[in-house]
Length: 480
Image (cartoon, rainbow, N blue to C red; front, side, top):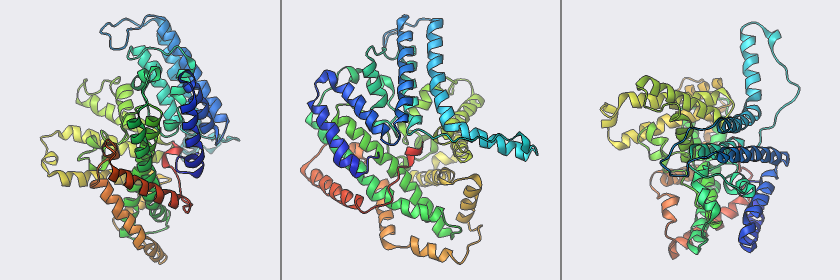
């Protein structure tokens, strides 16, 4: 079930909200958990069993960790952790990473091994599997989220939950279950105990949901049509290649930021305040700044639970570069089990290390900001080629077409006709204006005036109208 569907917009969401409002406060977390399990299990009920198992393990580990004395959240007191606490934390991390590794990377590992031994001239060493593993929706998101609970409790950043229903609600909450934002436990621990429900929250939540739906239906889906045509073409001209790359850059941004807006908006309607997940990332003037603006919940998770524990930038320049590279490579693999994602992570890791090496004294930092924004967007867009391509060879072929090194076939003229349609180029222009000139949804919805309410109603009407006619409606991050 996706947010931009009639089933969700007209049936599931209104019914879920009405039931939530009618439920007594003590029963709301149980209701949200059941609704979330229904939402998650709509595609495959077995996915719910896997998530429930991960939830049970982490809840039990949190209870074990809290059974031994743990400093209260915010306390200055630090205590040596007991052996039981360390074992419980290790079980939690191993279980979550084990589930993620098996379901997401099993076939990637087998295929990589078979390719390696074939290249070494030992095809008889190849391992042929007779079964295929289905990737559960959102497993990359909820395992990171659930794992943050035991880590926060172990560190003393949050107190353990005593009620398993409350914890199940935290892990499975349907607004951000399958595509984020990744909500770390200490960010919502107090809200699980007590939160307010106000008309202002509801109004802003509805506004964010409408803006997110509009981003998805009006911009992401339209730009995605052009991106798919160009990326899947056998050959393409230089201009067609750049138009397709720009279209995909817009598609992935509005697809994911639109989903985040909808998730945050639904959370507000339920009384939860989730953190901001996007901060106009294409307006960044460096790759370092880009990662302070793009998918903030993942960036902060990798920083706090991986980069800083590895030493961050506290152990000298060489170790800092290694840590940056390792974090971005793992971040690439987190997105997908393919060498293209490793290459994408390597590109961003190299750019981060290079920027840190150049420091602010370099000529790069002296350039006017518009030039730096343009160069940063160019690097990010080049990275999206690996993100979008099905293989490394496809990515190199596409990159070659961007500089005129790929031979074009006569049939590419048909591609040119498809990409030059006025309505497609018009929506691309709208996407560019929203990206670089429009205010952020997060800020625009802080105050809902009569004029803004009318704008929202208009956007909702157009979005729902197009939703009835569009057959192209993917959510890119659902596959992660």
